[in-house]
Length: 347
Image 1 (tube, helix red, strand yellow):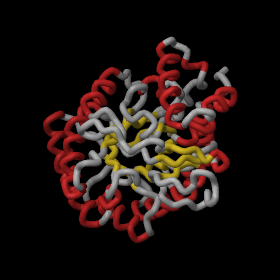
Image 2 (cartoon, rainbow, N blue to C red):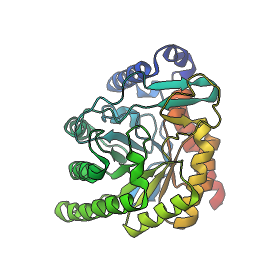
Image 3 (cartoon, one colour):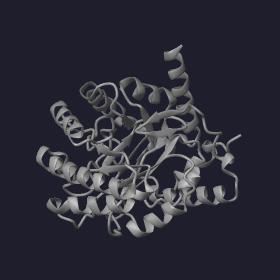
């Protein structure tokens, strides 16, 4: 049986959130290297689904941000995930925003972070990716350096795409983090058109060179008006994107007003994000039709939350903050709930 996370969490929650995060990743890697992963998680739920030309053993994945440098890919996969996404990686190493930059809002089961794409850069990232055994599909999430002007952002994304294309099962283009100044402007009509056109052209050239076409997805914000979601959806279809991840963290503080740390700058994740994320998923599904791949993320804290994402139109579901509050058992709970839900619908 898995080691009860409830015994470990109080110790972790006494630490600074970023310190606890780093210690958890180190412990995870050590336990996995010792062949003791089952102490932390139950066996992977087998509920296979084919999407974007990829075979996923189940519908539950890890969202980007937890393992920014791809240091513990195999250990994370061993927790029972059907796929793992790592990053965000930028062309050059960068330290991110000043500390403290991560805050728990425990009463709301939420986090606020303003990490700012802290990572060791493409070279270190790719060394880690190459070492991984790839037991489940691996998504590589790309972004731009903070020092790169917005009008030159496409060059950073293109550099990342060229570097990761040969090593990714899918690539996620992150234009929706609120923690890099101006980044969300890339979701605007003209900026998005220009970026997607450049990425689509480069992806096709890489596919010709390497003999494989890697799916490319866009990760979007929850803080969009319906008209913006519709315009974004139309741009995705126009430029041949293979899917969308909805959503990133929110700058809203709805549901956490007056709580300690609620006034901190950064993106809010966890339970308060669930309804906003679901709304965007529903809008995207309505606009994109039944077959366009959507990965739902934001506020998944239980199997029921995962089912709700599915009902709103998500094909796959990702978790991150829920893993911090609920522990590895959440992976199995969500995957099992989705498997049973699919079975009930087809019965």
